[in-house]
Image (cartoon, rainbow, N blue to C red; front, side):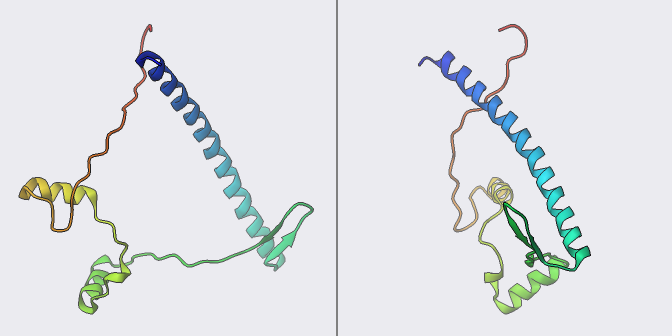
Length: 126
C-alpha cells in the first residue's frame, strides 16, 4: 500500500472507532442508569437480589479509598516508612519539569520516547 492509501484507511478506522466510542458512551450511561434504578427498587423491597428468566442480580458492595487530607496521609507514610500504601507510578509531568529545571531526571527515572502518528482531518476539498 502507498502512503495515501494507508492514511485514508487509518482515518476511516479512526472515524469508525469514534462512532463506536459514542455508542459505547450512550450504552454505558443507560447501563449505569438501569443499575441504579435496580438497586433502588431492590432496596425499596428490602432484598439484596432478584432473578429473572435470563439473569440474576445481587447487590454487591466494595470499599474505595478517598483521600481527605493528603498532607496528613503523606506525613503518616514518612513517619512510618509506609510507602507500600502508595501506588508505584511517578508523575510524568513532574519528572519532566524537574528534569528540564535540573538538566537530569530524578534518580531512578529514565525517559522513553514513544513514536506514534498524529492523524488530523483535512478541511476543504480533497
